[in-house]
Length: 116
Image (cartoon, rainbow, N blue to C red):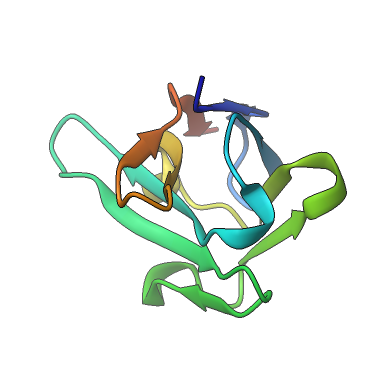
């Protein structure tokens, strides 16, 4: 079974930090590009950050300098470290990849709420 499972969401104050994790199973994790997306009821799902199999990273402009994506291939896990969080970062965050057959695989989502 190809599966991604996110965790680490929660409620934080503006300026705070959270670390999201995504555990992969049933895929050749070390070969695949992994991504974080986020979605709100009013906004379509948007890409937040990407990390390639080789460790190259790419970020959406609205998180540059605040978020860091990383991966641990030995644990089939990748992460999103979120610092200096803003209320507008409030969303459901999803991890995503595409397998070698170009089939998209999505996690179930984890809620991040940034509020005083």
